[in-house]
Amino acid sequence: MIRMYGYAKCGTCRNAKKLLAQWELPFEEIDITTDPPPKSLLKALLGEGGYSIGQLFNRSGQEYRKLGLKDRVKTMSQAEALELLAGNGRLIKRPIVSDGTRMTVGLDAERFEAVWGC
Image 1 (cartoon, rainbow, N blue to C red):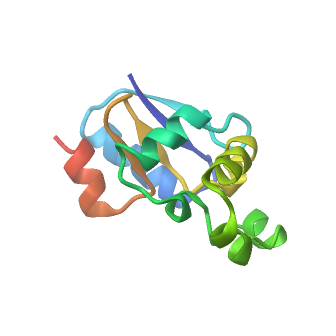
Image 2: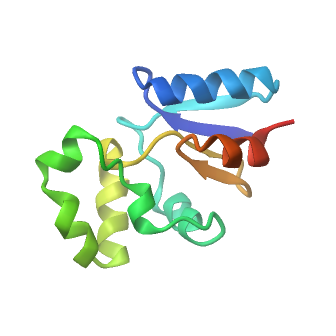
């Protein structure tokens, strides 16, 4: 089952939902702000997903700016960053789409279609 961690008011998340529906891929939608992805998924994004810790942060988000993370993220350990992300879904770039083996963060059109397109 595909899980999409997103936010209802996010245009990027709405676009991702449209694409998944267009490709007739059933998915479970999870509100990233109230139910952030577990650390295990975040770690998998760093490993098998090929993302860096910086790519997991929603750098244009209000929470990111409010907490002054621009410079702090560069010096944080991976464990600290994962703890912060797992505890606050507003800090995470969205959407995160995963079926347990394949995964994407954000909506890079080429990568999203390569992974999820039919």
